[in-house]
Length: 255
Image (cartoon, rainbow, N blue to C red; front, side, top):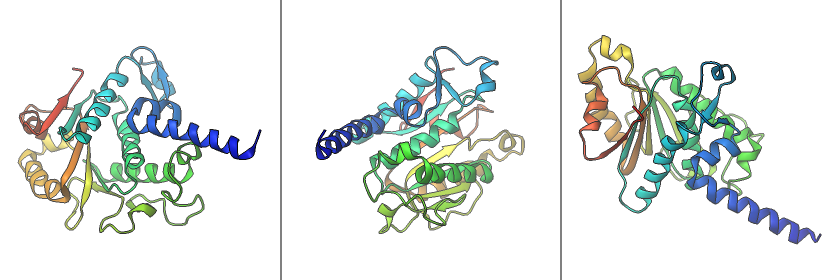
């Protein structure tokens, strides 16, 4: 077979994979990240094989994320809140969704908040490691979009910058705890991962967190940006209740 012809077939195949991965989070998770999928609900026995995701629970949930991405592209989008039970790998899928954001726009800037800063830093380290070391994933990105596999000081638990983002005033990714100082930061996407912890309810910090959202998250997020949030409810008057009542938010829950 002619080498140019073979290279053309490979390029066409990779382009098809990229097009699908940009719009189908289930495909990206199961085929590119090779997360094991099971047909029914995950049982206690299955937990020994984590991470894995289920056709009956996770697939329709993340299909809603894909649908919202399409609505945003059409100018009809809203912020997204997904309320999941505990121990259902929502953070894993949010991490893969962040990678999908970069597949759609390598210049995307993301701020990731978690109730516990160390948890947000674990996410930053995981995503930066995947972008530099996951060869199956790297083949989807256009040439020059990612750092070289041997680049030093790219993998980080705090922040990282992709080559396509050189002209931006903010890093490609920045990890925060919900009480962390974020003044001066800017992002196109805000990821709020379990920002409402049980301790916030028990320590009577609901009002403080509402102020944090208004004064920090809303100021860091660009006017044309979007918020993707996922978590578990601990109280009917938590921060999630404000988003549930807001017209600016789309709320999805299997419960």
